[in-house]
Image (tube, rainbow, N blue to C red; front, side, top):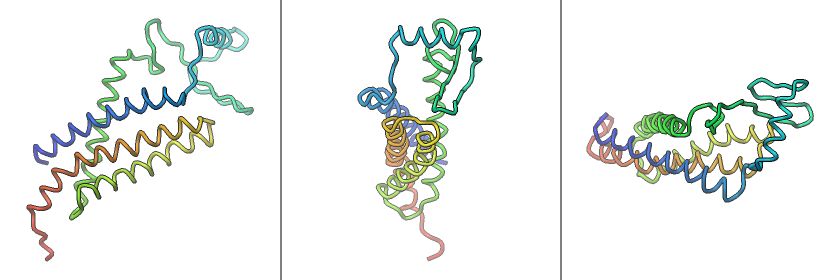
Length: 183
């Protein structure tokens, strides 16, 4: 893999990270895809979950009447479900984006004689397929709202398309300079 390919993976990582932040902060918030409880509601739910007659340990719970509950007793000052600090969550997310960018670069590298736009569009369609495969079952089985489902699918499909624009550039240069041995 050339230094240009590694640069493409680095740029694709940044694009995936920034696009994901835009989707989760901007679109989630703008569409109110996830309802945020006010402090008094949250306190009531915490009291209920910690009631000795009900006590639920950390985990994911699903009831037969449509209740879907994630319980995670967080340490003071920890504001995310994983128990990691927010800066650490961002670091882990960046690593995840780098891994995805690397896998997408492998896919783009296998596409010969395609334009940058066509390669990026293919990655966008693969992202759409992946988003539908992962996110629609969350809507149908677990009752995740349609707004959340749409935002999550757009996050994957849009991010993969944008990453494809960057990842296809080094491949375009490489494929135009290499002659096809079969011809």
